[in-house]
Length: 270
Image (cartoon, helix red, strand yellow):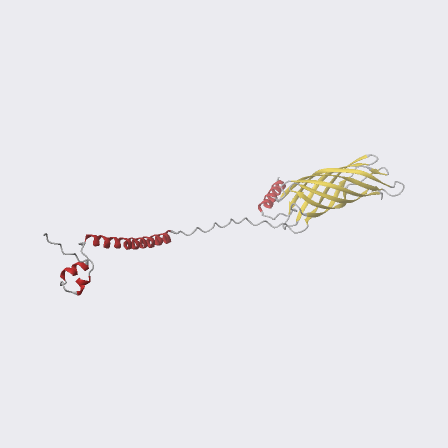
């Protein structure tokens, strides 16, 4: 009970710490060195093969998209007999596909499946042979402190098409190291500034209107004045200054004699 309580407290403590994403991002490559514990199926010279940490593998992969990784792994194992010095050296090449969940979280579970071949070299009279292999299992990525390194653990079942079909159980544990630079987050789009409001033209229009009114008033006054003068002239008596002056001029004055329109005397009746 005490052990379970401590484990629960450790998990809760790990979840409470913020951590940067250590697992590779989409479009980023990685390498993974793993140690392998194997419980092998089969015998050598009639002696059962021993289980234990018998080797490991080195994988290089690429994050295709949010939920998928692909990798190529090279395996190297030495399967020793439980008794004696006999052993089988295994060298394998396998392509794995990983279905990853919660890539950006602290814990990222995944499913793994792969297919490849393996060379079993028992040495001596047994010799070696190439066999088809396929494997599948589940795993977990745990982000460590940093932005590149994650702890990787997985449990696998492996089937090998040897002279007798072999069924092995394996546990891999190691580190997954992201390569290359991470994509920088795109800056938040900045809203375009609204264009400044157009200046209001109310005042200039008022000024122009006032000026136009003043000009119109001036022109109207100029047109009205001649009409008033003409009206005054029509209202005056129809006596020209020349006629007025002729009445006041003596009969013998040169001015009167010079007028060409002097009336002729009216003849008296006979």
